[in-house]
Image 1: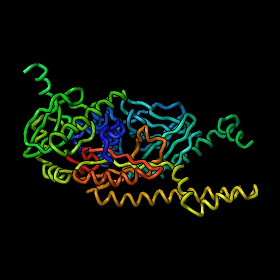
Image 2: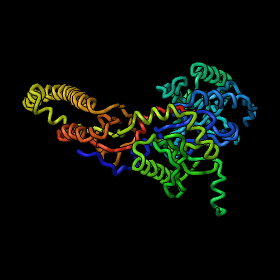
Image 3: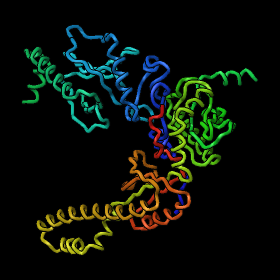
Image 4: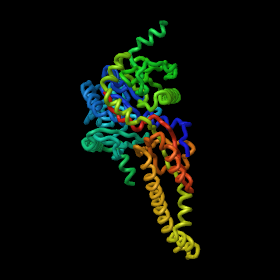
Length: 197
Length: 267
C-alpha cells in the first residue's frame, strides 16, 4: 500500500500541537494559542492558561509557582469563612483544541474548595466541601499528582505536588466543618440522617 | 518601501515554521498564517523558515480559526519540505522575539544541534502507521481456527439450560482472551517487519481517531522515520496486515519528522 497524504485534520493536530521542535526559556512566547514565557514573565502570566504536558514545564512550573506565591491573595470569602490550607496547583480545562492546565492557588476554606486565579482575580473553580469527593488518578506528570474531583455540578481534574498534604488538609477541614455544623437543623446532620434512613 | 512593508519589517518577532537546509535568503510567498509572507533567515548552511509578526501569540477562542491556522502552518512546512528536503518542523505558535538578526543569532547559538538533527533526518521522512481491527471479525475467525473454541460452542446447544449457560460464560471468556492474544501476536509479528525497515520507530499515543475508523479498535499506532527508498517495502509489509480479515491499516505520510525532532528544549 502507498502512504496517503490527504492528511486529515486529526493527523495534523496530533503532530502540530503535541510534537515538533519547541524552544526553551525566555524565547518562548506561546504554544498552541497558549502564552507561556514571554518577554516578561509577569505579562505572559497575566493572560496565562498553560499546558504542562509539553515537556518544558519543570522550570516554568517553578517560576510560575514563585511568581504566584509572591502575590498577595485576596480571595473573597463569606462571613465566617476562613482559609485553612493553601497550595499552588492546577485545574484541567478543555480549551478548544487542547486540554490545558490552568495554574492558581487551591484554597481549602471552612466551606469550600476554591481555585483562585490572582490575575484577573477570579474564582475558577469552587465546590462545597461537604459534597466534594476526591479520587486519586494516575498522573501525567512526574512531580505533580492528580486528583479527580466529583461534586454536585460535575467533575474536574486537579493537580498539585503536595497531594498527601492536600488530602489531609481536606479531611481536617471536613472534620472541623462537621464539628462546627453538628448541631440540630444543620445541613450536614440532615444529609447524614437521610443516608442512614 | 510601502508603509505596510515598513510595519512588517519593524515587527519585533518571527513566527518559526521550521529549520531547513538552505544558505540563502529566499521569499516563499504569502503562504503563512493569515497570508503572511514567509521567508528564510540563513546562518551558514541552515535557515529558519519564518514570517514577521508581533511578539504575541496567535490565539483564538474560535476552534475553526485555530484549526485553519494549524492547517496553514502545516502547509508551510510541506512547502518547505518540497523545496529544501526534510526540515525540522516546529510546533504550532512558537515565536522568536527579535528581528532577523536575533533569529540568525539564535541559529548560530544552536547551529551544532540543529545541523546534527538535519543530518539525522536527511533523506528520511516520518510516516504514520495505525493498525485497527474489528473485534467481532477477529473473534469469529478465531472460532473457525481454534478447535477448542469451536468444539465448546457446538456443545452449548446440546447441553441442558443451566449447563449451557455456564458453558456459554466460559466460552465467552476464553474467546475474549484468545482474541486478545491473537491480536497481540499479529501485532508482534508485524512490528518486527516494520522495525527492520524503519530507521526509528516510536509508539504513538494517538488521541484523535479519524471518522472513518471510529467503529474499529485501534490496536497500535506508530510514528516511523523511514528512508525514502524503503517506503515501498514498508508498504508491502503493511499490505500483509491490511489483507488479513478484520484488520485495517492506515498508512500516512510523508510527514516532516514531527515525532522525531529532538529539539524539544532549544534555547
